[in-house]
Length: 274
Image (cartoon, rainbow, N blue to C red; front, top):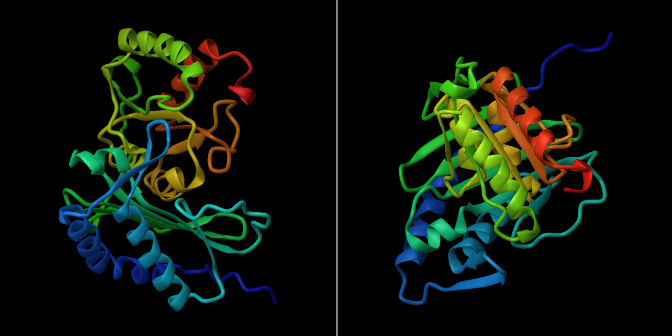
Protein backbone atom coordinates (compact mmCIF):
# COMPACT_ATOMS: atom_id res chain seq x y z
CA UNK A 1 0.00 0.00 0.00
CA UNK A 2 1.28 3.46 -0.92
CA UNK A 3 2.06 5.64 2.09
CA UNK A 4 0.04 8.82 2.52
CA UNK A 5 2.28 10.21 5.27
CA UNK A 6 3.00 13.88 4.71
CA UNK A 7 6.68 14.72 4.63
CA UNK A 8 7.80 17.06 7.40
CA UNK A 9 10.60 19.59 6.91
CA UNK A 10 10.88 20.97 10.43
CA UNK A 11 14.30 19.35 10.82
CA UNK A 12 15.64 21.33 7.87
CA UNK A 13 13.98 24.55 8.99
CA UNK A 14 15.29 24.25 12.53
CA UNK A 15 18.77 23.42 11.25
CA UNK A 16 19.05 26.65 9.25
CA UNK A 17 17.38 28.71 12.00
CA UNK A 18 20.11 27.50 14.34
CA UNK A 19 22.75 28.99 12.03
CA UNK A 20 21.36 32.53 12.34
CA UNK A 21 23.11 33.74 15.54
CA UNK A 22 26.59 32.89 14.24
CA UNK A 23 25.73 34.17 10.78
CA UNK A 24 24.44 37.46 12.18
CA UNK A 25 27.62 37.88 14.21
CA UNK A 26 29.80 37.29 11.12
CA UNK A 27 27.87 39.86 9.08
CA UNK A 28 27.78 42.52 11.80
CA UNK A 29 31.49 42.16 12.58
CA UNK A 30 32.41 42.54 8.94
CA UNK A 31 30.10 45.55 8.53
CA UNK A 32 31.98 47.29 11.38
CA UNK A 33 35.42 46.19 10.19
CA UNK A 34 37.80 48.86 8.87
CA UNK A 35 38.50 46.60 5.87
CA UNK A 36 34.81 46.23 4.93
CA UNK A 37 34.74 46.41 1.13
CA UNK A 38 32.03 47.04 -1.43
CA UNK A 39 32.57 46.03 -5.05
CA UNK A 40 30.38 46.51 -8.12
CA UNK A 41 29.58 43.28 -9.99
CA UNK A 42 27.68 45.31 -12.58
CA UNK A 43 26.06 48.74 -12.75
CA UNK A 44 24.08 49.18 -9.48
CA UNK A 45 24.73 45.54 -8.51
CA UNK A 46 26.97 45.36 -5.44
CA UNK A 47 28.73 42.66 -3.44
CA UNK A 48 30.45 43.14 -0.07
CA UNK A 49 32.93 41.16 1.98
CA UNK A 50 29.99 40.33 4.25
CA UNK A 51 28.02 38.79 1.35
CA UNK A 52 30.95 36.53 0.53
CA UNK A 53 31.64 35.52 4.13
CA UNK A 54 27.95 34.93 4.85
CA UNK A 55 27.57 32.72 1.81
CA UNK A 56 30.75 30.76 2.56
CA UNK A 57 29.54 30.06 6.10
CA UNK A 58 26.09 28.96 4.94
CA UNK A 59 27.47 26.73 2.19
CA UNK A 60 29.93 25.04 4.55
CA UNK A 61 27.33 24.47 7.27
CA UNK A 62 24.61 23.17 4.95
CA UNK A 63 27.08 20.83 3.22
CA UNK A 64 27.97 19.42 6.63
CA UNK A 65 24.34 19.08 7.72
CA UNK A 66 22.94 17.78 4.43
CA UNK A 67 25.86 16.39 2.41
CA UNK A 68 23.71 14.93 -0.37
CA UNK A 69 21.94 18.21 -1.15
CA UNK A 70 22.82 20.70 -3.89
CA UNK A 71 23.48 24.34 -2.99
CA UNK A 72 22.59 27.19 -5.35
CA UNK A 73 23.87 30.55 -4.07
CA UNK A 74 23.98 34.05 -5.52
CA UNK A 75 27.66 34.90 -5.20
CA UNK A 76 28.89 31.57 -6.60
CA UNK A 77 26.19 31.17 -9.20
CA UNK A 78 26.24 28.23 -11.58
CA UNK A 79 23.41 27.19 -13.87
CA UNK A 80 21.24 24.38 -12.58
CA UNK A 81 20.80 21.60 -15.12
CA UNK A 82 18.69 19.27 -12.95
CA UNK A 83 15.81 20.28 -10.68
CA UNK A 84 14.77 16.76 -9.65
CA UNK A 85 16.82 16.88 -6.46
CA UNK A 86 17.03 18.73 -3.14
CA UNK A 87 18.42 22.21 -3.70
CA UNK A 88 19.18 24.90 -1.12
CA UNK A 89 18.63 28.33 -2.71
CA UNK A 90 20.58 31.03 -0.87
CA UNK A 91 20.92 34.79 -0.98
CA UNK A 92 23.48 35.63 1.73
CA UNK A 93 22.35 39.27 1.87
CA UNK A 94 19.29 40.35 -0.10
CA UNK A 95 19.42 44.13 -0.20
CA UNK A 96 23.19 44.50 -0.48
CA UNK A 97 22.97 48.15 -1.53
CA UNK A 98 20.84 48.88 1.54
CA UNK A 99 23.30 46.94 3.71
CA UNK A 100 26.33 48.75 2.32
CA UNK A 101 24.73 52.07 3.33
CA UNK A 102 23.36 50.84 6.69
CA UNK A 103 19.82 51.36 5.40
CA UNK A 104 17.29 48.68 6.38
CA UNK A 105 15.88 46.29 5.32
CA UNK A 106 18.53 43.73 4.36
CA UNK A 107 17.92 40.03 4.72
CA UNK A 108 19.35 36.55 4.72
CA UNK A 109 17.20 34.39 2.44
CA UNK A 110 17.32 30.59 2.52
CA UNK A 111 14.96 28.17 0.75
CA UNK A 112 14.84 24.44 0.12
CA UNK A 113 13.49 23.02 -3.13
CA UNK A 114 12.69 19.29 -2.97
CA UNK A 115 12.49 17.93 -6.54
CA UNK A 116 9.17 19.47 -7.58
CA UNK A 117 8.40 22.27 -5.14
CA UNK A 118 9.60 24.67 -2.47
CA UNK A 119 9.31 23.15 1.00
CA UNK A 120 11.26 25.46 3.34
CA UNK A 121 11.57 29.24 3.33
CA UNK A 122 13.37 31.48 5.80
CA UNK A 123 13.97 35.23 5.56
CA UNK A 124 15.83 36.94 8.38
CA UNK A 125 15.83 40.75 8.41
CA UNK A 126 19.02 41.61 10.24
CA UNK A 127 18.40 45.21 11.32
CA UNK A 128 15.20 44.43 13.22
CA UNK A 129 15.78 40.73 14.00
CA UNK A 130 12.63 39.67 12.17
CA UNK A 131 12.61 35.97 11.33
CA UNK A 132 9.97 35.01 8.74
CA UNK A 133 9.68 31.32 7.97
CA UNK A 134 7.47 28.60 6.52
CA UNK A 135 7.45 24.92 5.68
CA UNK A 136 5.10 23.47 3.10
CA UNK A 137 1.63 22.88 4.47
CA UNK A 138 2.44 24.23 7.93
CA UNK A 139 1.70 27.96 7.60
CA UNK A 140 3.94 31.01 7.76
CA UNK A 141 5.30 32.77 10.83
CA UNK A 142 7.14 35.86 12.02
CA UNK A 143 9.13 35.25 15.21
CA UNK A 144 6.64 32.54 16.15
CA UNK A 145 3.44 34.47 15.36
CA UNK A 146 1.30 33.22 12.45
CA UNK A 147 1.05 35.30 9.29
CA UNK A 148 -1.94 35.95 7.05
CA UNK A 149 -2.16 38.06 3.91
CA UNK A 150 -4.34 41.16 3.96
CA UNK A 151 -8.07 40.86 3.32
CA UNK A 152 -8.25 44.27 1.61
CA UNK A 153 -9.57 43.74 -1.91
CA UNK A 154 -9.98 47.27 -3.28
CA UNK A 155 -6.98 48.82 -5.07
CA UNK A 156 -7.65 52.26 -3.58
CA UNK A 157 -7.30 50.76 -0.08
CA UNK A 158 -4.20 48.74 -0.96
CA UNK A 159 -0.50 49.43 -0.49
CA UNK A 160 1.76 48.02 -3.20
CA UNK A 161 5.45 47.12 -2.95
CA UNK A 162 7.84 47.01 -5.88
CA UNK A 163 11.46 47.19 -6.94
CA UNK A 164 12.96 49.51 -9.54
CA UNK A 165 14.50 48.28 -12.83
CA UNK A 166 17.98 49.36 -11.69
CA UNK A 167 20.01 47.45 -14.31
CA UNK A 168 17.60 47.13 -17.26
CA UNK A 169 17.25 50.81 -18.11
CA UNK A 170 15.18 50.08 -21.23
CA UNK A 171 12.40 49.12 -18.81
CA UNK A 172 12.34 52.45 -16.96
CA UNK A 173 9.79 54.22 -19.19
CA UNK A 174 7.09 51.51 -19.09
CA UNK A 175 7.77 51.06 -15.37
CA UNK A 176 7.16 54.78 -14.78
CA UNK A 177 3.95 54.58 -16.80
CA UNK A 178 2.81 51.72 -14.58
CA UNK A 179 3.75 53.64 -11.44
CA UNK A 180 1.76 56.65 -12.62
CA UNK A 181 -1.28 54.42 -12.98
CA UNK A 182 -0.77 52.83 -9.57
CA UNK A 183 -0.29 56.22 -7.91
CA UNK A 184 -3.78 57.18 -9.13
CA UNK A 185 -5.53 53.92 -8.33
CA UNK A 186 -3.94 52.55 -5.13
CA UNK A 187 -3.25 53.75 -1.61
CA UNK A 188 0.44 54.06 -2.42
CA UNK A 189 3.58 52.36 -3.70
CA UNK A 190 6.63 51.48 -1.59
CA UNK A 191 10.15 50.36 -2.51
CA UNK A 192 12.07 48.67 0.32
CA UNK A 193 15.11 47.53 -1.67
CA UNK A 194 14.83 43.82 -0.80
CA UNK A 195 12.51 41.54 -2.77
CA UNK A 196 12.54 38.85 -0.09
CA UNK A 197 11.41 41.42 2.48
CA UNK A 198 8.69 42.75 0.15
CA UNK A 199 7.32 39.23 -0.18
CA UNK A 200 7.32 38.82 3.59
CA UNK A 201 5.47 42.14 3.88
CA UNK A 202 2.78 40.66 1.61
CA UNK A 203 2.63 37.56 3.81
CA UNK A 204 2.31 39.71 6.95
CA UNK A 205 -0.52 41.78 5.45
CA UNK A 206 1.51 44.99 5.66
CA UNK A 207 1.15 45.47 1.91
CA UNK A 208 -1.51 43.95 -0.30
CA UNK A 209 0.62 43.25 -3.36
CA UNK A 210 4.13 43.17 -4.81
CA UNK A 211 5.54 43.10 -8.33
CA UNK A 212 9.04 43.25 -9.78
CA UNK A 213 11.09 42.12 -12.76
CA UNK A 214 14.76 41.28 -13.26
CA UNK A 215 14.88 38.93 -10.27
CA UNK A 216 16.52 35.55 -9.70
CA UNK A 217 15.38 32.45 -7.83
CA UNK A 218 17.44 33.33 -4.75
CA UNK A 219 15.60 36.67 -4.51
CA UNK A 220 12.12 35.15 -4.36
CA UNK A 221 12.28 31.46 -3.37
CA UNK A 222 12.04 31.78 0.43
CA UNK A 223 9.68 34.75 0.39
CA UNK A 224 7.49 33.13 -2.24
CA UNK A 225 6.85 30.07 -0.10
CA UNK A 226 6.15 32.30 2.90
CA UNK A 227 3.52 34.19 0.85
CA UNK A 228 1.85 30.95 -0.25
CA UNK A 229 1.77 29.57 3.28
CA UNK A 230 0.22 32.85 4.50
CA UNK A 231 -2.66 32.41 2.07
CA UNK A 232 -1.30 34.53 -0.77
CA UNK A 233 -0.89 33.85 -4.47
CA UNK A 234 1.98 34.27 -6.95
CA UNK A 235 2.35 34.35 -10.71
CA UNK A 236 4.63 35.65 -13.43
CA UNK A 237 3.68 38.62 -15.60
CA UNK A 238 1.99 36.33 -18.12
CA UNK A 239 -0.23 35.01 -15.35
CA UNK A 240 1.61 31.67 -15.33
CA UNK A 241 3.62 29.83 -12.71
CA UNK A 242 7.18 30.69 -13.81
CA UNK A 243 7.72 33.27 -11.07
CA UNK A 244 10.52 31.27 -9.45
CA UNK A 245 12.78 30.43 -12.38
CA UNK A 246 11.66 33.32 -14.58
CA UNK A 247 12.49 36.93 -13.77
CA UNK A 248 9.07 38.49 -13.19
CA UNK A 249 6.79 38.10 -10.21
CA UNK A 250 3.45 39.27 -8.86
CA UNK A 251 2.38 38.39 -5.31
CA UNK A 252 -0.63 39.33 -3.23
CA UNK A 253 -4.01 38.29 -2.02
CA UNK A 254 -6.21 37.02 -4.84
CA UNK A 255 -7.99 40.28 -5.83
CA UNK A 256 -4.87 42.45 -5.73
CA UNK A 257 -2.74 39.88 -7.56
CA UNK A 258 -5.40 39.88 -10.32
CA UNK A 259 -5.51 43.68 -10.31
CA UNK A 260 -1.72 44.00 -10.66
CA UNK A 261 -1.61 41.39 -13.42
CA UNK A 262 -4.25 43.29 -15.41
CA UNK A 263 -2.47 46.63 -15.01
CA UNK A 264 0.96 45.19 -15.87
CA UNK A 265 -0.36 43.46 -18.98
CA UNK A 266 -1.97 46.72 -20.05
CA UNK A 267 1.39 48.52 -19.95
CA UNK A 268 3.93 45.94 -21.13
CA UNK A 269 3.72 44.51 -24.66
CA UNK A 270 5.28 41.10 -25.33
CA UNK A 271 5.59 40.12 -21.68
CA UNK A 272 7.55 36.94 -22.32
CA UNK A 273 10.50 39.04 -23.45
CA UNK A 274 9.87 42.16 -21.32
